[in-house]
Image (cartoon, rainbow, N blue to C red):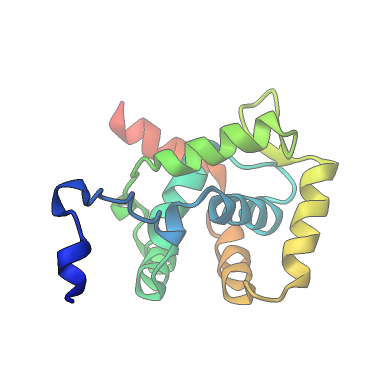
Length: 154
């Protein structure tokens, strides 16, 4: 007896499964990204959504990171703004969970809950390269650069 004889082929269906979300678009990854970014690149003044999105577009690839640092130091006019909706979603989530607070100047800061979360992330020692990148751009990428970009567009 053949196995195929017992199967009723009309009742077999193939449903397409949803594709897995790439790690760079997962909310948990974006929360890690935003938490470390605010702590290391904008620890005193907070971080604007525009700054988060600009860094997000140059963040994932080391070649892009080097290119971004070069542009910050030598040619700021070449920096591009790319809107990252996953960053917006993560910021909205973090704000609703009171991980971030919105300041009167429109910049975001970590709350005490956000600081605890960031400390937990750092204890894993899994994101040392990211932290190094954020520290490196922190002093080279003030919010005034974003103001310059906005003025060029106006």
